Length: 184
Image 1 (spheres, rainbow, N blue to C red):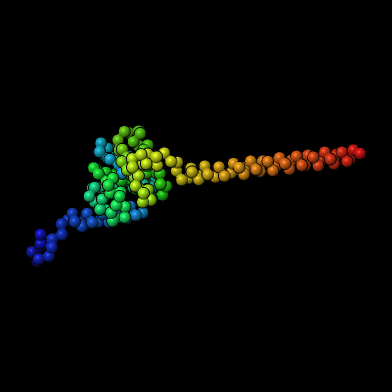
Image 2: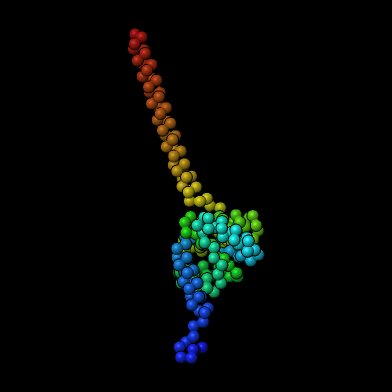
């Protein structure tokens, strides 16, 4: 199709699609994790509520056409992820803690029984549905770091207690010996 001056006509959808793909490529490249969901059955109010919950945790939720999402996945270097993009899908993209999108979506699914998680992407690795559920069960990074610190601190606390006990016994023994010498 050409215009009257012989130039190729640019349809309105063409540049918009390229823009959408470029935007999605940028989001996929920035994201540390992504979860593919089937948004069918979700009412507008529920979608607004879900987006609000995700946004509060720094997660974007994007509803996108499969062809554009597949093209963006290929352009972002995660072509294997494109296989998971079938049917009407929404992508939850997280930029910090790896488990945040999966955890929030899993909780939302448990409460509302809509929006099943179909697949995921974590730092370039594609996860199946079971893998995403496992990821959802992981505590947040902060909780894991706290648990690690507690695990590391526990033996140190035990060692400190043991050393303190030895010093207390030594002090008591020396005090008893001093008392014995003073008595003689």
